[in-house]
Image (cartoon, rainbow, N blue to C red):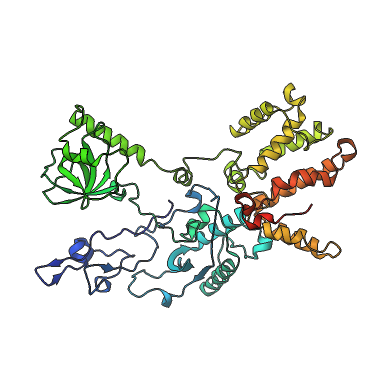
Length: 513
């Protein structure tokens, strides 16, 4: 996704001339002359007693050119995960002695070693002070209000003393560990920590899109020798094992695609026999082994072309991957609030601003926010906002005669947010505040604490919306929508319980108005 990990060593330790084992210089000849900063020395590569595997300790850090091995936050496509389940998370600054022995990372005053512990795993990161500043900025742009986080702002100019700087970052990470949780749904922030949305370490190899990393759909062994006659084919002898990665049906192509060792290419399907029951439903095993070719004539070049395009279509990137790479951007409706505001550059959603101003100017009518508008008008306005345009509300006669369609559109926007305005993560906090004793000040205090925990985009939007609804409720004698009535029609759009939407015992828990 965003992380550029260290280059892996290909292959294992094999025996040469009987008992002699190959060293790292045998695998990478140029290693003896030039060592990279993130690889252990040859003496630190230890072979296991039972086989030829090797253990290499590495540290996610910087490349020899000094470029960070993870993309900067401003270079990452900004997106928010819809579902995040983070367990206990520990982040701390490591001293030089805490770094594993054998990792030849040259110490310097610019980079700091950070240890992350999550989901039973631990790993080390190399980050600069500028990296920390970008993390701090993103955290308080999308996740936390600084009043709640109590994280000291990292200024552009760091402390002059190295000891003071280390102390500042150590305290910062300690506090971040205390408040870190499922509220952190910002993709670049989790990528900074090399975390996925389940709290596991996020590792994506540079060659993630290479054919060698395509998972096999079946295993086969060759029953007939084949010699490649083109650059995109592979050769094999009788008895060689083949990992098949694409098996088009015989009527489409006589060519399969597979891996032998580290080679990937096409080969005739009649030259191999499948030895696994993991077969595509549309493939007849008996037919594939007995036929010497396709059921109808297929040109050699044409057959491979069909197989190539079939593999391309089957391996197309997922919606999530396109979203993470910045190719796919969500529309206005149904897009995460923080993600939408940061990508659009607005402080609050334009849907809220335009609709609230229009309603305050023309929508003080009976049953506003209670009565529904015309569906066709609502969908027309929705399409306009989704196309990143502002509808001409004041000039459209159909809208001026159907004020309720604008009110219905605004409620629809908040109802379709993937994470509600008051967030799934803070649902229990809001429920506890509402159920507190009405006679004491504890209820108001707990409600204030819950609101302050909202991410900044949610807080700004909620503040603007509540001020608008307060002005509407002041006209209750004209509209019949008192403060209580407004709360009744708006509460389900702002505060939702995830368990309530999927069912279960927790669905019985409700919120009073």
